[in-house]
Length: 57
Image (cartoon, rainbow, N blue to C red; front, side, top):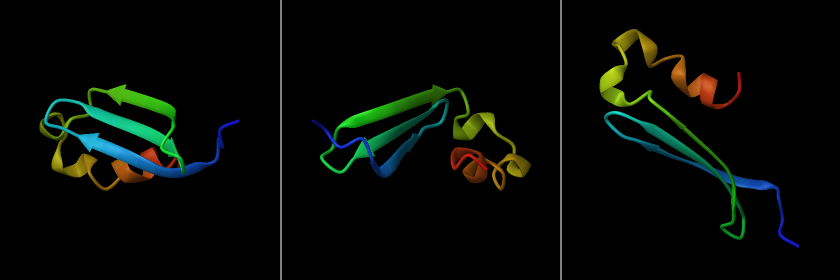
C-alpha cells in the first residue's frame, strides 16, 4: 500500500498556465491541479496573494 501522506508540492508555473502536483515520499502522484493563472495572465498586485491561495489559506 502506498503512503498517501504529502511529502512535497511541486509547481510548474508557466507563462499561460499553472500546474500543481501533490507528491508522496515515494514519488507517487497524489493529486494535481491545473488552471489558467500563468505568469503573464496576472497583474503585479495578484502575486502576494497567490502563494497563500496555493497553501489553502
